[in-house]
Picture (tube, rainbow, N blue to C red):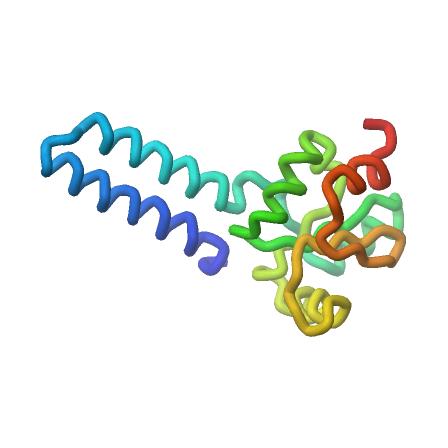
Length: 145
């Protein structure tokens, strides 16, 4: 759990430290702008921008019942953020599994990606798609969009 928040925490603390230095040097305007940028970066890299993660077994069970895709992701991954942003509100119709919270699922992602934890890995009907193009994902996963 703490691993998912490490990058956002470092961004927020680093931005705060630099902003404090700018304020002490007499530049409050740039300090505020700098702090705002780093707080936004921390927010975007946090688990908060993704739908609530569930366990891999629960995601597989639900996917088998209703046919929705399962997306394996990890916080701070720019490709996961890109997919999430491009899917928009439809992202909530997929089941999201944070591989940092589920070590067994991280091993399964490595198994289908030649030993790498390449995310996002989208599983549709039992077939994995590694780092799919967001356009493809929108067209094939949610054709009614």
